[in-house]
Length: 624
Image (tube, rainbow, N blue to C red; front, side):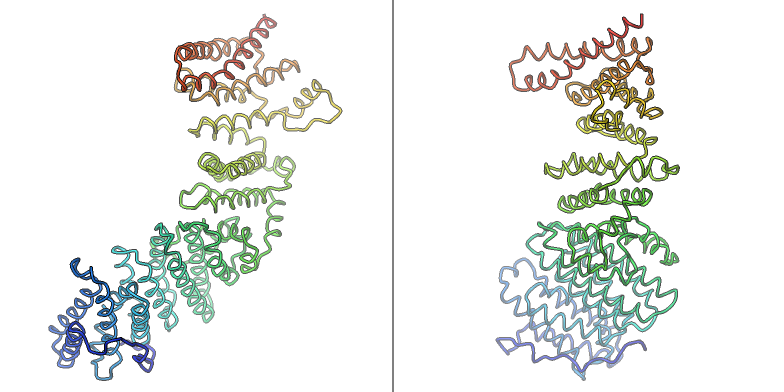
């Protein structure tokens, strides 16, 4: 034992263990004999045979907890034998006559094998837990930390039995309580192993064993409490580093809980999230700092990088956890109170500052784009995003901002994430909320950059329906200002034109979107009928621009120039008319259901296409 171990307690209360048949089984006698031999070999200094004796004890324990297939058909004797084996181990460890070197040698192996018994019965779990507690209290904390971490790391590759890990994580929590020095280093050893287990187990679909999963995260909460207690006793730079590590640990756990495959995740996991949220004030993590990402960057900088990137890699979901911490606060006022927050105040600060808002919007990409989080969590995330965008005058707050380009990548990713929600969900209400969020975020982008974002979204989308929606947003954005109620329709068109002078939508760029759809860059006509929706939207956009320009006698998009009209007529519209007519003729011959669907999809395209051709022909005649 090393010098930093605290004195062992008064021993194990064997009186708590009661077996129905007091007579020992043959297996119990063999185990007792192996333990006695182990003690004798250490007493005599025969270390060669002592190693063999330790291996024999471990082998006997493994044979009972992992019996051959032929023996596994009779679980009742196995359970009784397991209890006897654990009692025998207890008796040996607590006996004053047992050689201390033998106890130390067994402590290297016992946690790994004894914890396996915990899943056999409640009694086995109780006895196995008392054995682990004894080893934790009697051995060096530093040694026991390594032993428990090795046991966890070994078993995660062999089994996903949650009870095993609950026992070992509980032991780790108690080990951390007993550490006397080098606290940060020891925490850095334990946390990657702990988070690895939580990540693996929380990803396993096992709705029937949700109580064990909650117990597992309960053990993780106990570990967090132990780290906080250590941190409170420290001062200076190392305290700040440990506080930051605890913060990252909490955020990672928030993300892992939210990834749970349990049904009704909000009701199942609310109490766990509430307990983790109580750490946030101690870690100096505010909702404002979390939702903007600033807090994660700050605590990450606090952690010493002398260990390289390996340690920081275990916090890979911390940024997601930051957003989720606030989403959970939106879900439950109790959780927000546990974090010491008033969410409405946070949202008001975000609404009043466009740069803060853009930063916060970008944070949602981690949740909404991930396949790891259930739809229930994503739905609450979209609701929070909508709440954040309420009552914002986007044109006033953002149009004059000069440094928007740095926000474009994160906003683009967030918008793509919202698109995935719209495409992927089967919930109509969520799809509607996601569409509202998409429109609000796009409207919040300065007009000088809005077209670039929309064009990038269109060119990077593989969904015809989504492309059509995005083109419709381009069309809606051309007349953004609401006309006065007493203004005539014709004057309204001119009014809208004047208000949009200089807008990217009133340049030739708006026609780029139309050409992108009607004359794809890869060549050939647009794929119909698959892309009938974006083709219809592109035709409507073209018709809309042409009517506004010709009515107002302007030509800001160059759409009325003879060269543009001839190009549109010969390269976009006529080839499309030929394609539509061919597909229509071919499907009119077939009397099958799919042919009817194709014709129904092409009918509106054909109607708008012919109207566009008429408009172009009229304008060509006037320009002649």
